[in-house]
Amino acid sequence: MVSEFASILHELVLDNPVPAKDLAKSIGKPYSTLLREVNPYDTGAKLGAETLLQIMTQTGDLKPLEFMANSLGYELSPRKEEKNAKASKNA
Image (cartoon, rainbow, N blue to C red):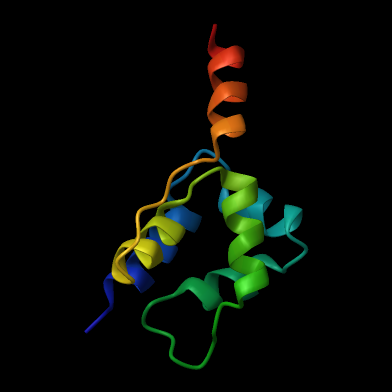
């Protein structure tokens, strides 16, 4: 059985606006290695925390972080100054 977290990681890499090959290049990983690390059926490869942070930074997708926070009983929200900066950009 595939965990929900593993599925979120897999979808993040394969189904986001940044093509997986470009994402791999931008985080300094071979494409095949990145795909193996996020493959929920490959138990021999693991995705490191640093790589996960790079993936979220490059894609702007925080679903893995939101899932982890929720699993631990926390809510994730941007800092006040981050909210203000985003509001200014959208105005």
